[in-house]
Length: 285
Image (tube, rainbow, N blue to C red):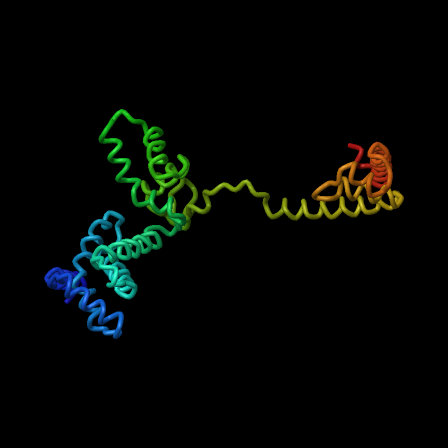
């Protein structure tokens, strides 16, 4: 028996499983919870498999196998059975529906695309409702532009318009491997990866920048030897620190006015410039 026939047989069996009356359902749930009766749990689960199948059918539009959706839904069903509290007097189907749907949605988000999406609750809601909302808005007013539709959906779901536009673009196209071949004139065997343009520096440029940076640091260290202790302290605090100190802060530290700090800083910068130019005449340009 092939997998398709096996799936059909399973679905037929599940749909034929008898419904449980409220009292019977509660009795089975109590037996499972109090006595860890596996048979009672299995009876509850099997009697609700039609609910799993019905929900799986609603998610077939995402292109994933129905059998996989049913399997994931069954995992959610078992989780619901393990957590169900019969003393609350709710019907099991009401409680299980959330777990079944959540399990299927997580599976879809993991497998629908190689690019992970729907990482927040708002993004997840957008993923599963965008197509429905778009169709509803377009049907209500066919004159609406894509921008207007995106704005309406963003307001309804509680996300930004850019999030809606990004998700809409993702749902409109399939994933394509960067190693997929492309046919271009004169480029036999070229891949999509070869067509990508990067603004990052080339390896040669990176090495050159690194060498130039190290050279400039050596020049600066040499020029700094021409400064006295107070000048060095001010230049390091004002010019060579990620969070430059203020004139007031240095004045308070050194016991001088902020204007005096500014004068010392200006003088020290002039001394550095002279030292750098004397050591490296090419810097004049």
